Amino acid sequence: MTLKAIDWRRVLTDNSIEFIERGKNVKRGQLNVHCPMCGSADPSYHMGLDPDTGWWACWRNSMHRGKSPVQLLVALLKIPYWAAREMAGLDRDY
Image (tube, rainbow, N blue to C red):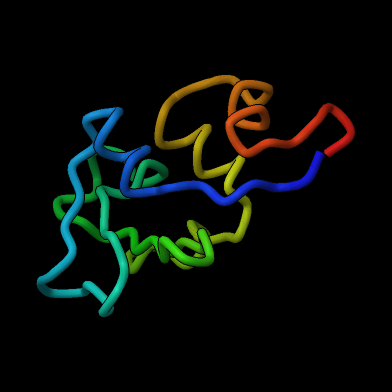
């Protein structure tokens, strides 16, 4: 299996995850969410997610960034790694 394109807007909407598309710290074309790694310490929408590439980064903590859709799905949806891997269209060997 290969990585499939993830419709991030739909993932966020279907899972009732609030996001913004405009405002302070929101780069044009990105979706911003509360950083799931910062948790309650994130008072705003500090994690930017590029819906085209799937890359994500927190404005508050540079350690909270990456390119792995699996890692982000696990953090956002609080699902097991294997479930996130399946959502991303990846098999066990990933």
